[in-house]
Image (cartoon, rainbow, N blue to C red; front, side, top):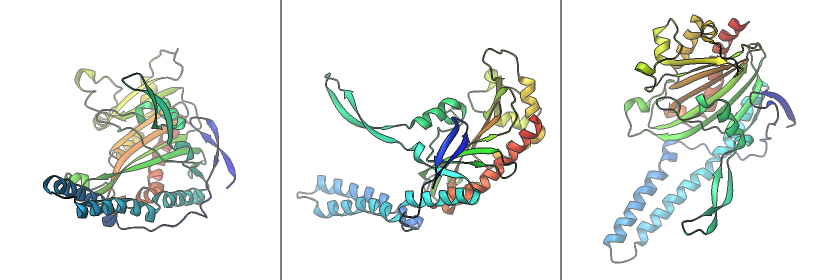
Length: 341
């Protein structure tokens, strides 16, 4: 596909080429129980090999063979599924259906061999994963939503980005998503359920980070992030609204966009956080484990993190739910936009 230029909250404008998926192999959608089977089987086989090696007088041919087959099954499952290719096809379809662009190229981690000095003063080249510059720029711009914080966000793991226009008002938007597998089969009952009806031990923990243009400059930078155990008692000094529930759920702070401007922006932040806006944010907070917003002049950033369990965590679960999630956050943007207009 040809390149398209889009508004971008970090580059102002960016050129994006949505990948061509016509030649991607379909792969096989395997059931969850089958995907979960190779890893525990490999671990059990490895333990069997160790026990047989220490207790026996001969080479443990059978345990070693079973262990080799079990670990080979892990790679075989990945090869049969072609999960990365299938994910790309799904996301490109989402982008095309909405007239957006999509790529994961800017968020790809690279392997580099760099010289490392050992304890004896000698240098050797070692391979290490290098964080993409795009992700570093995202984290530097909005650290309140992307860095690990006690009782709040768990860092950010992203693997793809969308650019396009909002359906409600045609203003530009940007969304990045990512997910990692989690095993909750032995965890508490709450860990085996999600807020969207999913049940089961197999799960995914996802991050959805986005930005909307609201088409009017506010002149302030307001941060609404989860309240945590650090900001309690005498340390609880953030901006307070009239809602006790909102104050208990979110930590609110603000400052002028110009760093030389030392004026107090409390009233401006409170004017943005109207009762309707607070109700919208609380409603979203009930459906996402971690939720936060940053209003930076004329851009509204949001971050949502939560778990998916059972069928919702099956292949493509986050991609199936993504359009509906975006519509939920659209309401928060529209509520704030009504104020600034």
